[in-house]
Length: 181
Image 1 (cartoon, one colour):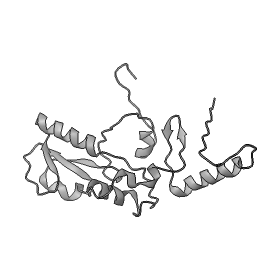
Image 2 (cartoon, one colour; image 1 turned 120 degrees about the vertical axis):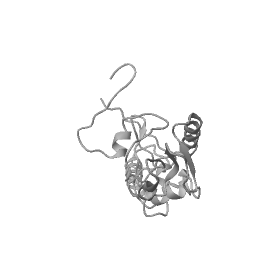
Image 3 (tube, rainbow, N blue to C red; image 1 turned 60 degrees about the horizontal axis):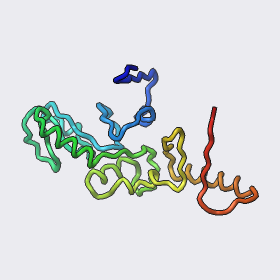
Image 4 (cartoon, rainbow, N blue to C red; image 1 turned 135 degrees about the horizontal axis):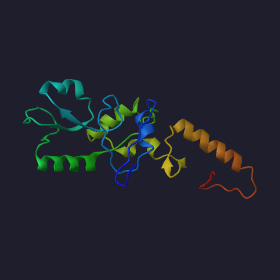
């Protein structure tokens, strides 16, 4: 850690969700993670033929150093041009999102990947993920803990069950804060 930057090394293999818990930012650029299917991507092409292996339905645009001659439904940018980098940044700011990777199916898709593809295509929005707008919300140190609808229901019903036995309990919104030392 320095006054200008921090580096975090994790000795064990961690999921992207685990690593993101340590970061606070509006947008995080991630290199690699080709198998992650819960967020849109800028596909960086070194060769034209890489499209088939890298396109997974989550690409917002492509970036490369060769002139665009791809036949695709999204923008292709040359990373050596300042104006293209600015355009890519605008796309990322406008269209980026991160699904919780719970694969709960509450959105109607088998997994988060299915919903993510629909969001990238403009057919759905991030608001179509019930796990991101739960009726039961748990925060730890200000960060929301993602829960699938089944777990959220267990937490909700357990808390309501416990509180309903107390004098003064009334139906309505419940807020609980626990400070650990």
